[in-house]
Image 1 (cartoon, rainbow, N blue to C red):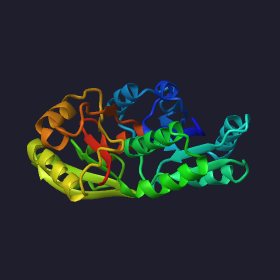
Image 2: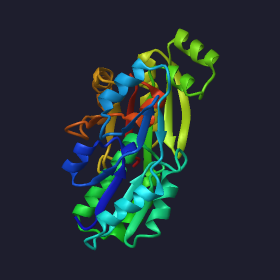
Image 3: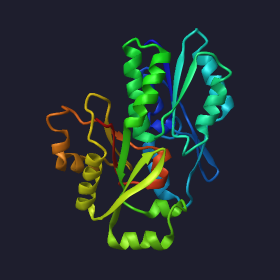
Length: 280
């Protein structure tokens, strides 16, 4: 690779997968009560959802400090290499600001505000890996990532409003009404989380998700894309992919599937499915 890549754990790339991809991952800290874990290192995505279901208290995620970023940047550039660091949206966390301040002290580091998180941040990281493998310089790759990130769309269909209520994002009355009516919200993440629409029941929810993908401009299959699920089972996602084959068939031999982690999982809970892609 022509430069080294660092992603934060909000990308839902766990430590072992990062090693397999040939990149570095810096974990956020997540707290359940008095227990503190390193996201994707000492707390797997599976175990996160176990604990989320078990507890009545919302977990808390801490941004990565300027000191930790500076320490990691110095380690990664010690041999004279340049580094591109990709972090979750500055609209969701102060992590980007901390990374930028640290990068100002370490020559050869470029920080990208992904303007997304989770599977959206993942596909931007996968694009960075492609650029590094092609021998593109860090400076040129940084420009390409800044431009291409504008085309990323992350769209998700939620199973429940329960966790938005627990996090104080919606009122208890709205949450109860939604549960009674079996409402499935569709959200997007571009900078911040936005509500795209609501459907009653899973079938209409899947249709709404597909409609939102079409309205976004469709999938650029020459670029990285992925689907994802929250919770411990991919069954809902598997059914969605099978029922929505018109989107994928003739374009992709294999549909990537990943598990959503704590950054987004805290607020959407289990049973959600999502799609992240670059628009045409």
